Image (cartoon, rainbow, N blue to C red; front, side, top):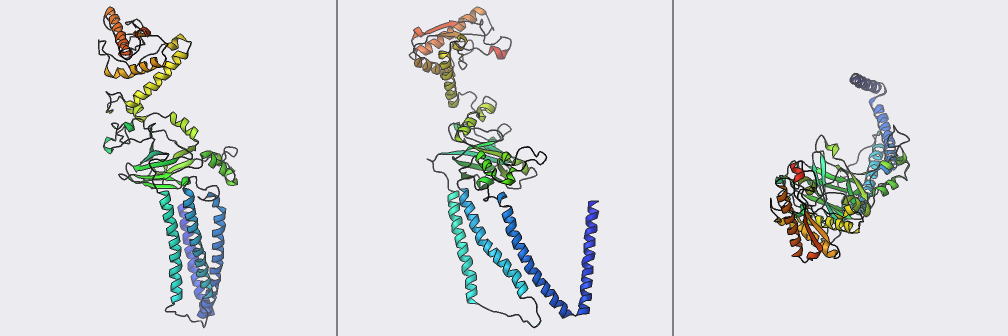
Length: 492
């Protein structure tokens, strides 16, 4: 029905225009061609002047009306350290080209009026004017020089890479249809290597887990966190098609190109909370965020920084939006401390793990921290249950009291703890599962406890502080009702 109405309207307008043309022809025949030409020229001239006035007034009024919604004006000043230089460059360009824009439109429509057709007037032909050509050449050249020099200065400032000794955080943004995968370095502060040939269902980035720097890398959830006042270097790449890493409030925009890594460096200077407080000062941002809930949250309360893709990368292009939160260093540290290593939580010990049979340095350090905390808690606690520590990373050869090579890491932690608390005396309790003869299990557990004691005494711990004891299968860590439970054979 709507299409029929539109078609009828177009048809009606066409008929009206044809009839106006016929009326004009009849008027010309009645009044005479020259008189009609004179009247048309006069009206066209005056209408050109009227259009010029209305158009220019509309341009300035609309610019003033919507300035608080435009980047660089009102509350939307740059939220990054470098953004001010870009805004200044755009403002200078706007001023210089705006002058030309206004003067050209005034000249265009004024000349249409001033030099309209009048009876007896003849056009003049000026073949050459050196002064006019000099002005037309020199003025644009000077303006372009100013813009290019300012632009180069801004480019050199914005695109300069970080120095190795600078304090900065480096993250990685990988675009794919239709999502951004963000990777943070772990406590080592370094992002690990990637190899596209390693990309798979459980390794979307193709991280090379033979590189120790990848072991602590973090791939967080949907929200991106950055600390305010900290320089950020973003590695930018793509897996499939061309994407664009776009943070409009920070004046950050860089293509993400498959096979050709790029980067962008910026320093956030406004937290999300700071930006909301700026918006709060403007009436238009105190309107309801949802018109259906007039008493609900205001627009400024719902504001979030956004990461978008500024390329039309496919039908799901719109879904690449990610929320970016800029917070204080303390808030960032609290969030970051809760993030877990992608490798250790998603890959470690699985078939695709190239380090399955190794104890990694990162695990050694992590176990040492945990062991130290547990020992301190056990020493300080008055609860008997807290004073029993389970050594989870000690293993023996099957059916033997011979320690495996990887057991030394846990035992070295125990040596460190005993040296830190020279006054404590411990019982080293050995256990087995219920498989086999109970008497043999008892002997094996005693032998295993003795092996642990020997390891400790060989490293300077007094034998008088160590009391080995075997419990066989009498005190299992878990019920001996499954292979999984029977594998839990700690040394206490």
